[in-house]
Length: 286
Ligand SMILES: *[C@@H]1O[C@H](CO)[C@@H](O)[C@H](O)[C@H]1NC(C)=O
Image (tube, rainbow, N blue to C red; front, top):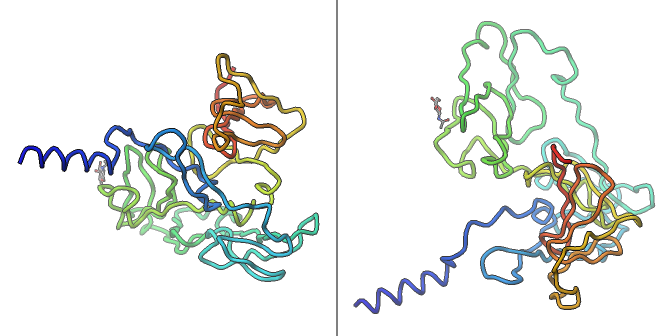
């Protein structure tokens, strides 16, 4: 009996890797490029990602989530974030086809905010869907989530630590006792990285994230001839590293843990999850 229990326990441990701590989130660009997590050293967390071969994508077509579009075709609604609807496959500057997205102008963003009116947003539309004015707007419920207060109708991103790259809308149905992933008023954010920035990735550029947020990037960093690797003292020679544990950036090959010397203050670029390096913009830096 005891032996059976022990055996069961050890089987359970192997299948869930008892000694693994929590893993960080999958970097958003790997998620949206539909890359697949892989292990390098341990069985715990994905340390590298296997991505579709972007260089092999036919430039005479647009590509989005495994679908191919011809010139003039419009990206499917379900593959397009609410504020990037109706993007059309068209010729970019270099003759290659890419999606070009119309700029969405929500009336409430351009007109003077009307006094005493509250706009209500929804998870699947870019612009507000409802307006409440006058006395009625004074009595609308508010939402409280993880110590923050949000106004009725507001579309908000909870503080990064709790958001797991989700955004939410506050209304009378908001239930702050549910986990953000299960909250009906919240939705995982689609950054539209494939839709809007596939050409950047194809040119070898990498996204820049703000601080430790792994949600939508705030920009891109492209390789430059001036880039140099900052050597790490005591690190074994690169010839000893497993080939699939290396990052590529332009003409450079980095080992995990290595950084690029950037001329931009407060930008830190390093090889953490091959094959792409990751850049982070920090607020405070020396
Ligand atoms: C949940 O919402 C209620 C009011 O709707 C608020 O009193 C409470 O503090 C909120 N809980 C958390 C954990 O934010």
